[in-house]
Length: 146
Image (cartoon, rainbow, N blue to C red; front, side):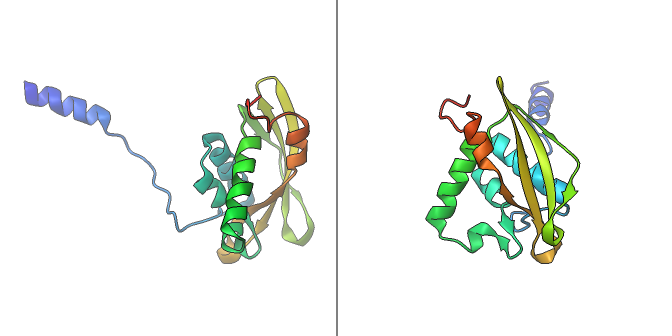
């Protein structure tokens, strides 16, 4: 009886976890790049955020000073905290880029931010830039988190 109880406890403690290949950066589509980037921001996961931020040459962290990259990612995490993000359908930008307007909510604060995605190496999509100034002006970047 004790064995059965132990097995039941162990079975309940086990769960299937999707493991993302850490060597796979960016995303297969522009929307997936935005989704993953926002999920990383919501989880306050700097590694995952950095794995989705880049440009036509690939990850930004592979082409910039490490200290500068880490400082920028910390600022992005601070400003991108949110309770809810609603992503509009993309529009086309210059050079094949895809633009997304995203409505953020953090507590009583609201902001609409333009995100730009771009295709990099190996047909992977990255968040290239977003308008952090809008988030700063709306109070999203405060240390209190809104």
